[in-house]
Length: 587
Ligand SMILES: [Zn+2]
Image (cartoon, rainbow, N blue to C red; front, top):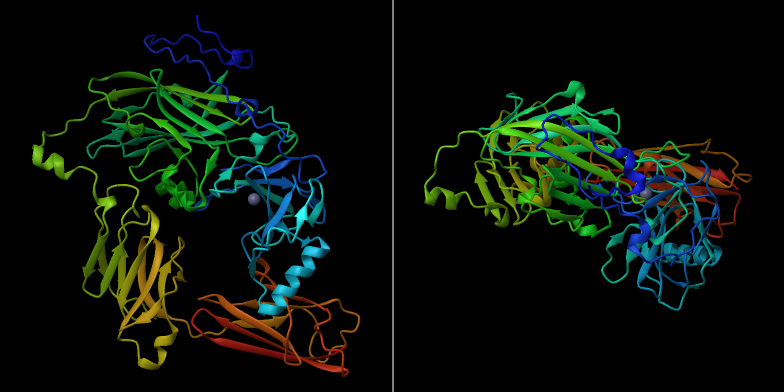
């Protein structure tokens, strides 16, 4: 008899007919108390803490680096320093974290607060002075250690919705100061109620050999997970037939008490016939490695459907420290035909656990014997090497360790599309992720001289629409770097940005207005720079890129002499097309 922790006694597996598989293991329940380091920090907000997102949640091309604390759908809650320390960094940007603040603490951690509506006055004045001195809205400031000392609980800012945030909340992180590794803030014991185990949505199987298949049809099969009794399993008791070596995947979300948000799990374990094949714990990651998320998930399915499935196969170039253990890279390989038990345990950081369990019928696939020499050639080496591919009209340079797996890079060509200046190059497969950017150079000397400064590399989105991939002109070629395989060609961006006031502006009396708001957008290469002046003097327009909105809040930099003023806004796109908007107003 194996003891089962009390909290999991409801999960006792029933005896199954294929009795050789007893998928019963000591469920190592990871709770935050097991992680130590209790109560090093006070909470950053003085409202009940409900989360909209957890640390390490799967996002497009990155892991979520912090926890998102809900702010009751409004902005402006005071944000408190979570411990004594000093403000080490202040970053302002139109997208991303918006207004962000970093505090270094003597305990070796840095707390990060993002999407802020504004900073506490003393910090706000410092930032504004720096913005005016540099004539830039975007700043990344590193005040000296003694400049802004803070005490635990001190108000340092106010919560908001700036940057890439799509609703008011506080994005909060705890990083290791020395390594800048993001850590899971929940391991430090904030009061968050979570008694709900994760939900398992889908289960997937992957044939890992060329000759292999799942259910005799295709390399990948996705199944909706169904909950029967204590376990999740496959619909209708389905027992998949697997030919050859295989890997397993799971789509899962976690929910917490009293909030509808769907968060990520903390740990995932895969057992095959009671043998551990894979263990993931979302405790920390380095921001340089965040793109390796694409090798943690079933990237091909993500590209096609946006479903994010944890694929429990570990690519040779996947070095994520959150993969704690694996057996044979998660690839299950049996020599004999037979029935096997797959068991997956998913837990949140509080230890609430869900289990998926099902059987598969395995049959080995026939692989012709290979010579020793061929076997040596099949050793994984390519991803470790730089690949420099020169074809007619195109050069592709893929740096070492850019690929997660062994890949034979393919490049094919199709005729020029209307409006484009070069053939379309189909570079490998957009279902294959890249960890580092590859460099592309496409011969584009058919573009007349006078248009070359407006040339851009063009790729295509899922809907087949052309999108700019940037690039610069170099000796008859358009050269650029990209993380994405797929179709590339060269086109022109000849349309300058659009500037329009978001309010009644020209000739208006703005004496009673607090701010000037202007909308800016660009159709192709995107906004690169903007500059707003009043009577020739630079003023701070804050840029909210998700809303295409520039806002100048009247301050002491608006000239006071004369009743009439001239506003000029100059906006330039990625290839240098420029638009200028001017208006006069009274104030
Ligand atoms: Zn966030």
